[in-house]
Length: 302
Ligand SMILES: [Zn+2]
Image (cartoon, rainbow, N blue to C red; front, side):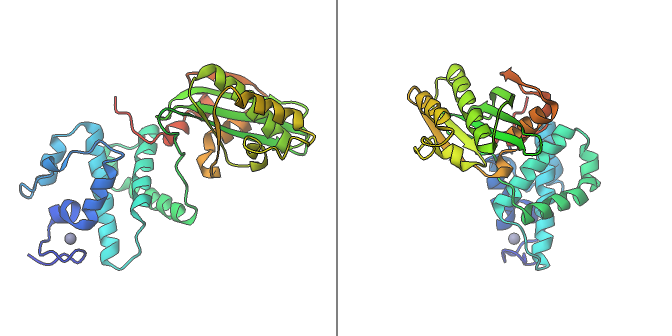
């Protein structure tokens, strides 16, 4: 028996390092909010083979999650022991969750490959990138509301413009996704106002709930939902139409970060470059199929 370098408890061993140590515990507790991990009652130190026993009681998906979690706990433990700086708990939770999702989506790693360390090199790269430019999760709307996430794409060179948007419920399920080419746009502000107006109208038809309107740029357009600054402008008629829509439904503007708006951004760019317009009801356009599951905060296991 020796003293744990991290928490000072007189106990060394894989069970302590991966489950009982404070540093491990806090990750188990936080990951449970994302993953259906076994409760503490199942995390039993029943000898050298405790981890194998635990894994043998779990479904394939949960087994992969436990392997990823303990692998990361072990890595971070080593880093900490060697005095290296380690990412914050939310960063680690985000990293593991998005890594798990991308592996599941790619379908290209088996548990064996994960164990052989195939993923560790690329995982380290992701972790480093994340610390340099922190990506934020898409903010799901509160239950009882829906979120209309909007973005536009505007090219000054040829004046082409398009809008992309997606209406999602509080679980991240897609109610509709649209992308549309916008004509006769003078600038990106007009494009954004058009986009917001058309899709607010569409949202009213497809949900009875209050709508949070999420946008990552052109906050001038988004602000027109809550002030009258643009009414006397050249786009006053658009603003008035937006105000009219707001009289029949509650719309709450929310500014989000670019990194939280990848789905709508992809839709808008796809629409502008392909010059195509479409509405997808209760389904997901192929051009965002790989992106939108990463926005959902929960994992749906069968
Ligand atoms: Zn410890």
